[in-house]
Length: 423
Ligand code: UDP
Image (cartoon, rainbow, N blue to C red):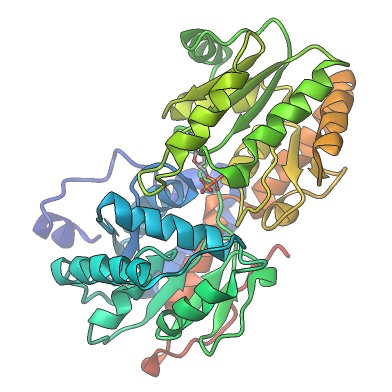
């Protein structure tokens, strides 16, 4: 924001946040100059992002960093959240599951709750921004309630490898009102009239989850939660969600542990827009023991400490639009074993910078291999860090958003190339 705009908005300085130049040490001067040049013509645009939670899950992590950095580039970028009662989020979680391939009983009542709550949100949100980004299905029908004067973009973070057709066909007319759709991978492309653009999210090295931590700080966080460090740690950090396959992680750990001693730590949180989390967490409690630790907490510093101290990080998802936790752990040089699905296949190259697995047995075998061969773990971790530096750091996401915002011509048509430079 220019000084006068900041003053109009009652803001004094931005010193609490990192500006784009802080990223220079990771990506070099040239990239920063390019980003600043791309941002310059967009200065003072007024842009809005809307999703369904301020906290829990990758989208809120992404928006937290994205909105601050865009403002530091003088693009006035706001963030709103769709509000609704528990039955609204129960319906939208079912839509989310169905978009990832689950079955659904798509009743008129579900559609009514969904559309009614979104309509109420539209009444109390006055959206006349230069560009509006709507994230994921929860606020998707917002677009039907405005006389649209500027581009609207639907940014879907879900694994759309095999969406349930009933839900897709119901949502498609909403989606086709948008001027562009952004999906994380090409494999998710759909038969739509709306142009589709593909780019993955990325991680912010300055967030609480990712910033540098001293060994003392790591010890302190682990001790705070009573996590034993006498044996190597096998870790999965994930919302409590069946798609993350926590039961599969426990089974893989139990198999691996017969061959190599280790401790499993499953840490998760429950996002406010995910009513199934508490039940998934409860279902895991019977597995708890001296060597299986299951924690439901929201503590970014603990996530950071675990990803840094782990001998092996798992993300054994069954579906995954893009695994922020995968890139976070790779950035820290961890040896990561990911499910061979969705966005994780773009993040991990099997055997080069981590492992991709398709079964509990494969996961167990890779855990054992990594525990027995620290040299291998270190090599994979080193390559993993480089992959994230090259392809999945926040500067890349910023640049792709700038390209996308700058690509709209009058009539809201996109021009230019907005795809991923990495793959
Ligand atoms: N996360 C966290 N605490 C937890 C679990 C997850 O802070 O207990 C963060 C995690 O570090 C990551 C995000 O939430 O930044 C999850 O993003 P991801 O893309 O892995 O999964 P999603 O929840 O969006 O499906």
